[in-house]
Image (cartoon, rainbow over all chains, first blue to last red; front, side):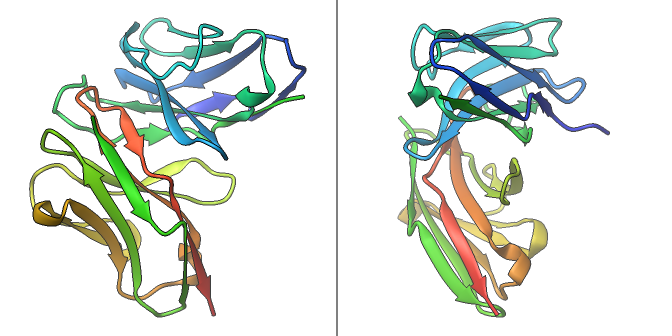
Length: 117
Length: 112
């Protein structure tokens, strides 16, 4: 079956512009996660969705970052007024777990490489 | 709070040699621990996971890891390195929401 897909694979944008990054999780996966991978900060958690709700947004670095999930499926991460420090690879993952201690595997997408010029 | 520390940002081994990648964790609750591998320009792939069952965990591609509570360690090993093992390896611990908290990664080089 299909894995986690993300689009676009690469995005170059000018400083100050808004960008939207999309994640299509594996069908039926209730949990969805966004992470960011950058040279300076490594792999960082951004936000977690259970269904359409986001019980953990603790990793969003500023109010310029937001995310939503609709229909318990596709998620969009939006970055407003992009800055050069937003340049990174944004990774999405999904899993079957509901959170809590019942752990399941997180399956990662290939990522979106964002470059802010 | 939970965290992981990966000792050694770069490890080099010869083909056929033992691979040992080190990971120590900190957790106030019984941890779930993971090793992920990332090949160049690809996403993360799960190698293995520890979820409080057997302390010796076997994963894909001949890798295994042993959970040692007394040492707060979860080191990754493979008896014989292959050229295709060259990649970046990440140790991670999960929180109560299952979000992963990653170490800084170890880049493995394998020389012929």
